[in-house]
Amino acid sequence: MSGLVTLRFWNGSKAPYGYRTVEAGQKGRRTKKVLAIDPVEAEVVRLMYRLIVEGDGQSGPMGVKSVCTWLNARGILTRKLCRWGIGPLHDILTRPLYAGTYQFNRRDSKTRQRNPTSEIVEAPAPAIVSQELYQAVQDTLRSRRPSEASPPEVTGPVLLTGLAVCGRCGGGMTMATGTSSTGKVYRYYKCSPQMRIGEKACRGMNIGMAKLDALVTTALEQRLLTTERLQEILSELAARRQARVGPAQVRMQAPADAMTDAGTRLKRLYSSIEDGIADGADPTLKQRLDKLRTDRDQARAALERLREQIREPVAMASERVATFASEMRARLREGEVPFRKAYIRAVVDRVEVQPDEIRIAGWRDVLERAVANGLAAATGVRSSVREWRTRHDSNV
View (cartoon, rainbow, N blue to C red):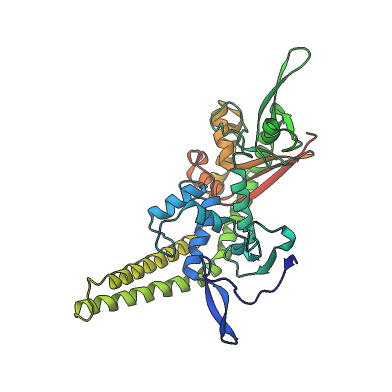
């Protein structure tokens, strides 16, 4: 029964947030409906996903609770004009529907217990976010689970805690020690879930601390922090932004129309009140005014976010790029561990330790800001999805 099928009609009642239903024909006396994307709500959904993996340009990547606070503080409310809560927001962030796959028959109608995977049916649906962005959010949420995260130790004495992850289970790696027969103490990174739970959680990965620190630092110096590589990354980032201009401009029309429509309706109601045709004290009329103002403001906000997406990239002089690369390479090797760690965390999202290789994944947007603003910006918080990746084969 499992698998992808073609589901023409929407069998649910209310459409999920980000969608609306449109009539698509009759079947007897019943009007059949299909899901369609609501252009204004869809921009809010895309914003939610971006806040998780990118942040708002100042805060860095956010957690679900932080996104709720951010939305509520800016008056971005639910369809019922309520404040966002963690549960509904988490559902939007983890529901495959938003990436184009609707799942039904997930629970038994009587017991409400989750059905076996073989009984869950999937059908295509209009996608609001890309599969890549959806997966990035799932990876981010999973990495923040207490069962998989290592102690943060952002300013601690260990260079890669909070960054190194086990390639077998995805859990964080933390410092462990061992003593040889001669009494010498060794330090190494070890899979945190295996340390705490045992081999039932993961077979585990471990690598000498000095070895991994050297591999990562050398890879960053030789494969990322060179003038040529940085210029290549910045050029690709500019090209990708340029490719987004067309689709974003097309999507701008719907919220622009929605903002104009809500504004026109508001003017009509205000005129009716001024002319004495409508009673401004009528509770129903007040609710209508509040709803139209919210629709107008949310459409305006969606339009502003789309305009931000097509902003011009920052122009970089080759001398600035070369200076930044040189200074960053020096900072990775010199100074106290907390300072070196801050620079590494600025450009690295994760260091994945596999049995036969080390994979380092990082971010493009933060590099652009750091090169543009100097080393002070390099210790800021990461932004955007993982965009550059290098690997270093090693017998771990």
